[in-house]
Image 1 (cartoon, rainbow, N blue to C red):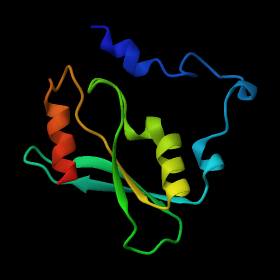
Image 2 (cartoon, helix red, strand yellow):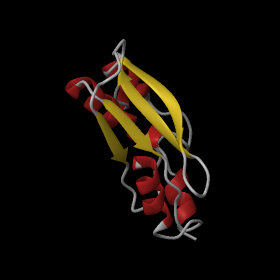
Image 3 (tube, rainbow, N blue to C red):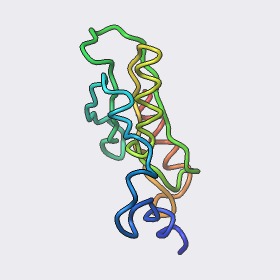
Image 4 (cartoon, rainbow, N blue to C red):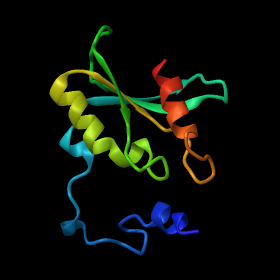
Length: 120
């Protein structure tokens, strides 16, 4: 299947990259973010999520659920941490990034069902 090269074709996998060609890491651009793992319950088992919270924030902040792109076939929360960290810092909110199950191993609408379960 063609999905394996898509899932593993990340920049730098072929060998060391020239550091001058890479942008700064998200942790450097948006350093004031606490990142934790959380597991949302679902009928099929826990769904791993990453929770991005402004550093030192108290409870009661608005929360946004983030479902990464990828057509329910590729991606994970770690791939979009630039965007989720940026949204967290610039909007002073908690961002919950959901790692739903991916096709073809889990055909549609499994990933969508995971997103709904995590939201609930």
